[in-house]
Each structure stands twice: as structure tokens, then as C-alpha cells.
Length: 83
Image 1: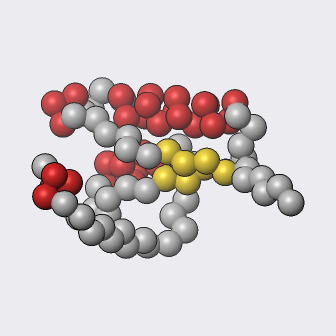
Image 2: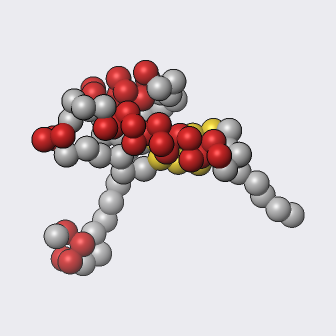
């Protein structure tokens, strides 16, 4: 049996605060969307930190719809992971 996923993810889209407000986030996100479309995928998911209204507005402007709130848990296994 072969499983096929028609979805893909955008992850870690960040713009340095000194460079925000110039449309870079939108350009980076659109580049990612175009790349995923070119792979034949039909579904894109992304995560962002709750309360980041600029990101939320951008993603809604680009056609993303919220589907649920998600909590992310992490456990650091070594001190090196903290730095």
C-alpha cells in the first residue's frame, strides 16, 4: 500500500523586526506557496505564534483560514538545546 499526501507545510517564516513593513514576509510566503503548488500539492498548512497579529493578517490576506488552536510542547533533553 502506498500513501500519498496532497499537503505540504510552510515553516519558520520570519522577518527580522528591522526589516518588517516592506512586504518581505508576503514575498517569502508567496514563494513558499508557489513552490508547493509546483509540486502538485493541493493543501498547505502553517503554524505561527498566537498573538502575532501581523502574521495572522498576512496569512488571512493570502487565503489561509484558521482551523483550530494548537498547543506545542517541547522538552529539552540537554543543556545544549537551550542555547
